Image (tube, rainbow, N blue to C red):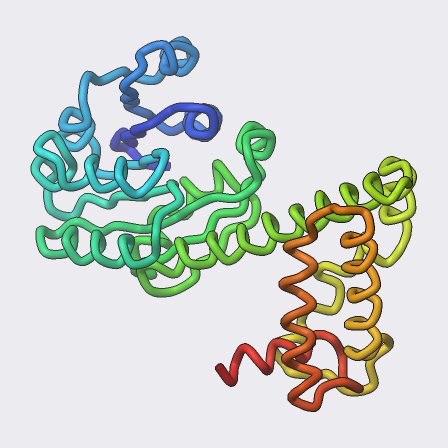
Length: 290
């Protein structure tokens, strides 16, 4: 628990429940948001509203931000009313927003030059897990600052990872989203294909939820980076063949299948490189070579 108040900037859809969980954990919290109405429930529970970013920066040795994106993050840090101009040396800034890794690194260096430590600490899990306090928190930045701020992370999440250097929190958040978004688009594409080919998508989903599709996205994923491709249960050439058949159904049904087409291209490259009898995961080796 911190004796000094925490400053929380940006209490919108996901920031609000995170700030709420900090209050419930017993932390003293100062809040600021451009939309005053967003602060109302937090004020009722004891949060102290301040009138600007600079007020937060001047009064809080630990500042937390939850903002829409890189533009807003940069403005809050480097703007005339921002953290750089108003925070004292030794301030720690925890940015829970999703940022570009290169921007997180750049801003960490800018902050370091004036004695401020910036931790890029994006979260994953969405609003429901923000409400429950069960977010995944991915932190990049100095170990000492991470350890000091651990009680904050513990109040908002139950899976907390220190990823090392500045920018790595932002990077792993984007990697996580690449998987989740691409996988979701594959599901969307599969259901569209079922519908276009005359099958009830609900029935297709029922099968997928009990079949290999339900476990295939991440099942055995550790074998990918170990490049353990031998003795596959389903060889790459067979995966490519089946995917080619799915593409053909899409052509016949006039349903676009861009995600499957991209995956087919990856498998084709691996097949050409001699991985036909290996696991379909061996496409990873092709990426490493190029």
